[in-house]
Length: 391
Image (cartoon, rainbow, N blue to C red; front, side):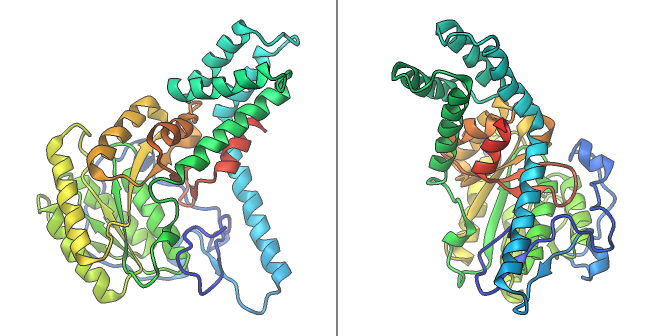
């Protein structure tokens, strides 16, 4: 499955489970798994930190498929990757599936009649999965209509009705924000991705993973370290830059973030970069000065490249549940969020927050973190997600 599809002139397949040196993909360091706020090893003081590229520096690699392969071979490889993706996604949402699907089974134990008491229990199950009260009420209204029409009279039909409604909500959210990088013409470069979110949600790690995955699809990527208020942020990005061989633009702590972004935009255009990923300060979402800074950065980006930033991705920790949804609401007011990156989806039984975000904010879930390894950031797929919750 291709991770980033803006380029259409070549077929690129991502080797999700194949390590460059035939070892398993490298897991993130323990310090990064626990929190992003812990100090990292000192970074170089140079403005641009670029590391040599080569297979040995990457814990996994991609394969660019040549014209010598038949259509059948290409389709077989793509199908294998799709199957692997589905299996990994299913494992990631296992806790949510147990909380949701298996509890629905319990509600229906003993072939109980569908009545008001049963629907009350079903309501509790949906809310427990962090689908949220408004979304739960919407889903239950659909269920009640199905019951009144005699369309729902057993557990399988009930599950199918819930699945259909959840899928409809997720698909509807794709009509808002930015659902695909292909919406921006290829002649506009660099494609600017601004990453926002409070500290501790996995923002720096997400940027590193995004950079490596997008680079693996054949794109030239540059990272802008515009979170100049927290020293550890720049240091951690420097580690990711070294790990991935992606150049990093950084300046000393306390520098105006908009100035760092301006320099990065100039550098990206000079080197012909396809993608510029911009880190931003992650102080608490109720700090108005942070929001003003984000607005300033957006203006700087828009002056340098048409339509920039083309995506403003809010990183939300799935474990925080409804608190993460409130963060999204605050950022949406000023930062112009176009999509969500949902991290740590594998670490919670409340993965229903994806549906709550889609329903209440009308924003697409662009990427999901489903593990600790460097390739465990995947394109969020609504069908795979919903099917994994029930099957």
